[in-house]
Image (cartoon, rainbow, N blue to C red):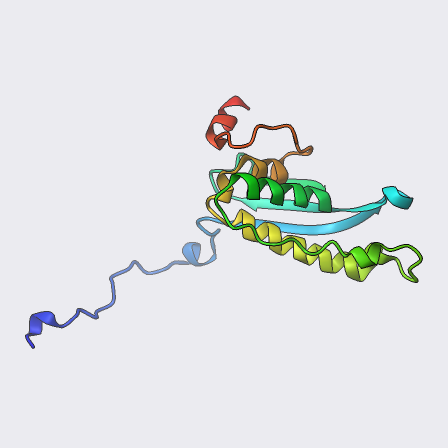
Length: 168
């Protein structure tokens, strides 16, 4: 075997890292937290909402920071919109917990603190998986969900995000 067939295993030359590079903001980031659950209403009109806080420097998002309040059905809406119109595999939401909604339970059911925290964690995993997907980041429904106070459920799906941004 000749010497020219041996692979070059030397390290690539890279510039030394300084403190600004090591401790500065990451080049691209997207952070989404679900927190501060609040249960509102009474009887059958009772439900829990969660704050959805987003921070990013990704150019695709028009706002670099936003905080909106969403309920479980809003997450269901987002999942259904993405399944209908996008080409990505949408992860499952945390379950509906139908048994916890039965009457005459000895506990608070879906309004019990431990259940709300478990659901909060599941919703946070769900939204971070979706929002981290490059194709999902182009979907208008995701931008509405993360950055607008009210979700326009009458929007026209399938319209380009770039076209929508130009109209807003």
